[in-house]
Each structure stands twice: as C-alpha cells, then as structure tokens.
Image (cartoon, rainbow, N blue to C red):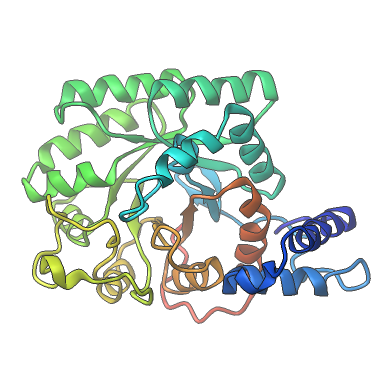
Amino acid sequence: MLNISDDDRIHRRTFLHKTIAASTGAALGFSFEEQNLLARANEESPSNPSPASGKKMPMGRIGKLSVSRLIVGGNLTSGIAHSRDLIYVSPLVKNYFTDEKIFETWELSEECGINTAILRLDDQVVRLINKYWNERGGRLQWIVQIKPRTIDLEHFSDDIQRAIDNGAIGAYIQGNVSDRLVKDNRFDLMEKALQRIKSHGVIAGIGGHALEVPIACENAGLEPDFYLKTLHSQNYWTFNPANESWEKFHVISDKTHDNVWCTQPDETIAFMEKVNRPWIAFKVMAAGAIPPQEAFQYAYANGADFICAGMFDFQVREDSLIANEILASRMERSRPWRG
C-alpha cells in the first residue's frame, strides 16, 4: 500500500496548517472530509506513522494485467466535470488542468502506487499520454474508453486501432454507448467490438450506468474481460430520481438529471455478486457528492474489485491513503475478489 515517507507526512501536514493560517476562519468552512483529513494530518508524525505507511498499493488482475485497486480517472484532466447546474465548473476545471498540472497528477498517482488510468480517446489525451511516457518517463497504463462518433463497427474499429497505435493496454465500450446499445438490442455490434479489441491482444470491457447493461450482456453470452459499472449509495442530498420516474425506467434516457448515476445500488450489488468477471466501479463518489472514505468503503465492501476515481492533484495522496487503509482492513465482503 501507500509508501509515505516522514518528509511526505511533514509536507502534507505543513500544507494543511498553512492553508488554515492563510484564511481567517478557514477551518469553519472546511467540509467534513477536509476536517477529517486535517485531523489525521495532525495525528501523523514520524513517531506515529500512518497504518498504511511502508506498504504498496494492492493490485488485482484483469486478464494478464496487474492493475492497482485504485485507478485514476480521466474526466477531470479532460476538463469534464459533472457539475449539476453550475455552469462555470467545467471551464474552471479545464483551465486548472494545464499540461503540467496533468503530468503532476499522473506522477503523484504513480508515486502512490496507482499504475493505471482510464482516459478518453481524443487528440488532447493522445498528445498528453505520449508526451508523458516519452518525455517524462511515465509508466502509467492506459485503458481507453471507446465512444465512436457514429455507433457502427467501422468507427469502433477506427477508434480501437487508434488507441492500440498509441499504447493503450485495454479498451472498453463507454458507458453511455453501452446503455444505448443495450436499449436498442445491438448485442451483435457489442460482440464484434469486443472481438476487435481482443484481436489486438489487449483487455476488452463493457461500461454502463444502467444495471440492465451487465444483466443483458451476461444473458446474451457476451464475454468481456471486465465490466465498468457505476456504484454509489443514495445517501447524498441531491439524489432525486423521482423527477424522471427512474424507479420504473432504469436504462439511461435522454432526459436524465446530472445527479443520478446508480439508481439501483442494492440490485447492482446483488447481481454483480454472481458475475465471475472483474468489476471496476466508477462514479463511486456520485461526482463529488460523497466523501471518499464513505464512497470507497461502500464500493470495496460491496464487491467492486477496482475503483476508478477522478482526482485533483491535491487529492491523490489522501485518496490513495484512504483506499489503502480500507483495503488493509477486515471487510465483510460477500463477493469474492474477481480480479
């Protein structure tokens, strides 16, 4: 798990204290998550090391690949933020994540034992990941989400080939695309896309927000190497599926609110327990609405083999520490580790 030196702990603790000192009454404005992290920083010292210090991030397997149990997501570094009705958030994120800041985020991830990123396939990501590998000496593994311009085999194949040519070690059908294909009963296209990915010798997966996606794909006999499926509790105050009758219509519609990603967590947990394939859980923090301690505990304890989490650079160390502590604890987990 996370290997934190004494200097790292001192620097993090000093940073938090300076942050408070720089703003009058700042502690009063801290979220519960930040207050908890600050309390932990106060408690840590060279004579009282973190329980996770000196250990490496746990790894799992997808196919022949060794993958860290915590995976860094790509929405934030691509300037994409689920911001509900706050129109300034995505432009703010895009301006924050300069090339240098993205490289810092990825380097911090690797320092914390995270060895894999899930990123989009576009000109910006292709440029950045190649520069990171070739000029910065990065070793982060890239699993790419495939979201073709037109949902047909030709464009799937073109995107898959581009991803492989640029060093991706895995690819999956992006969640919104899978939601739509399942709704339209296009399992033939999904199967062909999986075959194309596997033909390049890399791992192939299926993403989805709707529970119907893994259910229907398993029933159709598809054989992905992994699923990427949303999982989070409904314990956040903006959760309100009733507006769009989500209780009755679980496949993603064209009129969804930007605060709903997993409408059936209990059913998802129950079904995935029977699925003998690795499961990467995403949107576990409901796009920033649930603290990572609560979100990671919920996902790992309820069967997720891996978590994909979007993180700002200043969140990477703390999120890694949280994941390590949870994974090192005695979890009452009914689903066996599948990866």
